[in-house]
Image (cartoon, rainbow, N blue to C red; front, side, top):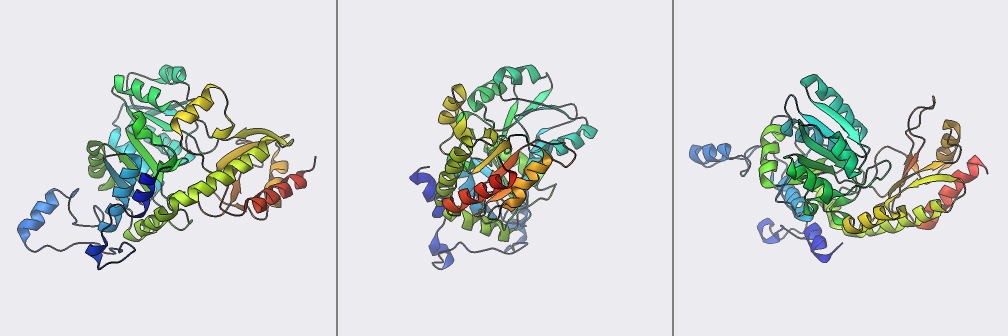
Length: 380
């Protein structure tokens, strides 16, 4: 995290003189924009990616957010969407054609896999693999057009060598896409490692207050223009100006919040790593050897999302632990001020025997005391 990123989050691209000296960027809650004459309207409509015509395409509040996110990721351009899945869907629909193949690297967000499953009806295939480069190479096919990465992933926090995969993909004319939500642009900048497109759920750390749903894609201008034309305008998942203003508010405190998420997350990871009832812990801070070296090269910090497996991880035992928590709430998202806990394990024993914790901004002693409450509930 550096001062340049902090400046982008707080003041970059804002000019108070244009808005009567207003400290907070104004909210342009309008669906359309008027023109002085037909000629100017016709010109703008032909180049809607660069002009304010209709807020499904471009809106001043949304554009300010897009400019900030592109700068944070060191990308040329950004397009914001009404949800993270809106961003993912627009990206895949824009890049893929019938007969194409997608390689998924590391555990992929469930709805993304479901979407790719649906796209098999349109002649698009996909396969998953681990982040090891040799496994990625073995999974590639002549018709592979996209490598879709999560690093760190959002359930097992797996990491992979972004530069190595990006280099492999460029040699073969394959576009690389990463879901960078876990790290945020402050803690990881995949485009600087050669990745083509970086996707974020704005609902998580970037929004930061659990009150907005949104998504964003950042990359080369030519690719973002392609997404704008094919995936944003035509699929219609446009981020509302009001939602954009909430994310802009979140960005103002992002550097401070991420420092605290990191501090709390590392404290919890250390506590769990030494607990006798924890059989397995997933957090980049716990990696060793070559993987730890990779974390040092790629990540500039650690966020507060981690998972672990209890010893004897039955559903009943997992449920007793989670249900005993009082500070941690049961909820599917993460990245807000509040601490959350979930498990993908089902009563019939299916699903992963993991507990995922989103470590919030509460006092660390209160967080650790709540986890002790959970361990006490399951006994020795």
